Length: 326
Ligand code: SF4
Ligand code: SF4
Figure 1 (tube, helix red, strand yellow):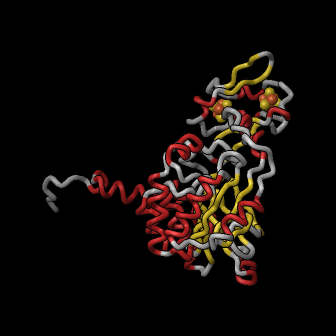
Figure 2: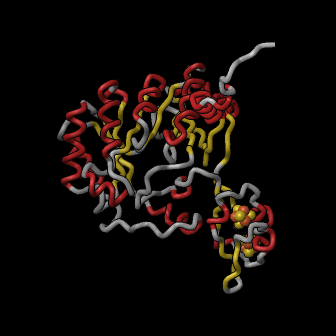
Figure 3: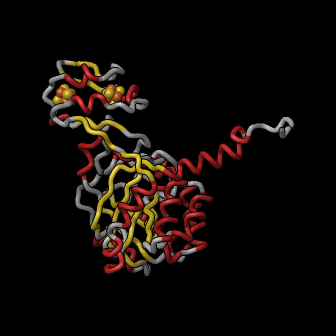
C-alpha cells in the first residue's frame, strides 16, 4: 500500500482547481444569438456568434439583452393577454399580479433554471434569452458554412456582449476555428484581462475594437466604467499587430460625434499606426428591448438622427484613416 504522507488531495489544490475551472469554462459558453450569411462585421460571408455578458452598460446599447451573463426571461408586453398562467406556474413566486397584469421580479429569476413561466405562457410573451453551447456543437454550427467562407474570403466573427467576458471559451473556439482553417474576427469593447487579449491575438485575424469615447470621465458617464484598461489593451494589441485592428465608432449624435472626441480618436489611431475605422450609426431599434429585459429606458441621443456620417468620414479620411460603415 502506498503511503502518501499528508499531501492534500489533488482536487483541493488551488492551481488544480483553477486549471479544471478554466477547462470547464472552455467547454461551454453562453450565447444569445447566432446569425449566418452576414456580410458585415468582417470581410466576405460570415457567421456571427453573439456571446452573452458585457462589462459595460453603454447608454445607447442596442442589445441590452446581451448585458447579463446568465440566461434570462424577456417579457414581450405587447403579446401579453393577462391570463396570469405564468404567475401560477412560477414556483419561486417571482411574478406578482398588479392591476390584473403580471409583474416579474427578476431578483428571483437569476437563480432559476426552470423557466416554468415561459413554458406556461400560451402567447409566447415570455421568452428565454441565452443558450449554453457546448464547444463542439458551436464549432460544428460554425463549420457547416465553411465552403461559403472559403469562396467569399469570409469566416466567423465572435461578438456580443463582450466575447472576452468568456475568455476561456472564446480561446477554445478560436483554437478550433484555426484548426479548421476558418478565418476569425473578434468584436470587442476592449474591457478584458490583458493576458486574455494577448493569448487570443495569434488566433485572431481581425479585431473590431470599439472606440467610443477617449476622455475617461465622459467614458465613465456614458458606459459605466473608465477606459484605462480599454486604452491599455488597445496599445498592447497595436504594439503587436496594428494591421489586425479596425477601430469601431458607435456614432451617437451629440454623445460620440463631437469634434473633441473625433480629434482624440484620430490622434490615438495615428499614434498606434491604426489606419482603418468603421462607423456604427446609432439606431433606436433596441429601445423596446429595455422594457422586455426589465431595464430602465435608454438615453435618447441629444441631437437629431441621422448622424452626419459624411462629415465624420471626411474628418478621418483627411487624416489618412480609411472609413467604412458597419
Ligand atoms: S424565470 Fe423562473 S423565477 Fe423567474 S418568473 Fe420564470 S419561473 Fe419564475
Ligand atoms: S402567461 Fe403569458 S399571456 Fe398570460 S399573463 Fe403571463 S405573460 Fe401574459
